[in-house]
Length: 179
Image 1 (cartoon, rainbow, N blue to C red):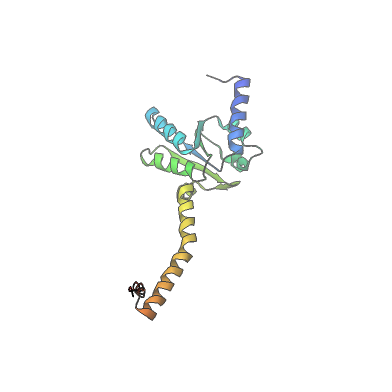
Image 2: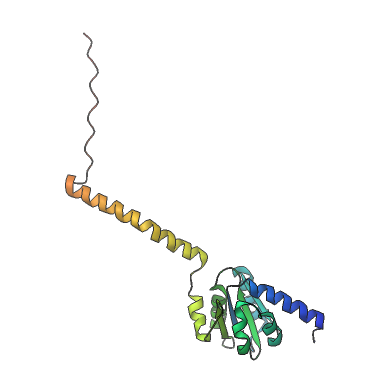
């Protein structure tokens, strides 16, 4: 069923808004994907902060005009599924990579990050980016490492100088004896 002009304008406006606030875009060929596979992929996309949409390439190319993803306009050929990462850059790459493991028909065709068009093989690189929680955990480890190294150095010096045991506390003075 063909869309009316007003419906096309709504689709372009919605896609332009999403493209304007997205971190990355992965467009994948989906021909031959079953309904159950698409449903599972859409469910996973909602859970991971990925906007997933099948739309005509002409509408998509109009929607990305004026955004970081304008560089992909010439690469939008054939039936494509668009995955925009809304929360973290690697989410769309992970979604497409995971879904393509069980589906030979799903293949990444276009990858774009920060206004750069990348080869489709870069979907693996994009998918390997850490999640926000993983990145924060790595940062916390890096920040905590100097303190733990200092503590180990102090302990090593203490072990060398005094055998590592704390000196026993002096005994409390005996109570005064009655006279």
